Length: 77
Image 1 (cartoon, rainbow, N blue to C red):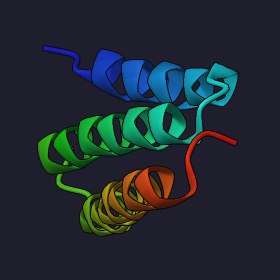
Image 2: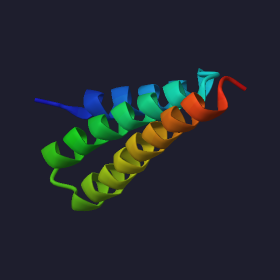
Image 3: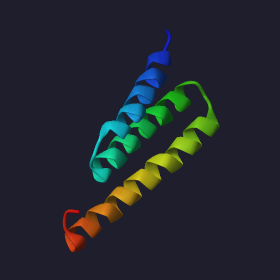
Image 4: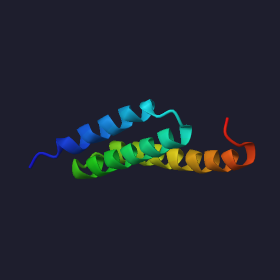
């Protein structure tokens, strides 16, 4: 069974993240795309893909949490 479609969906989701105007939405979509890449990397047994995208997903999740905190302090800009 060919599972390349997971990689293509991850690519499409990540690319579409740049269409979002709100930084928080962009980061959340990027985190979701990175998690899709992690799944794909696990399926194809590609440790560099898994590790790189775990880092990306973690950074996107962390920065979206810190962005949300600043939004409460600074308000909408």
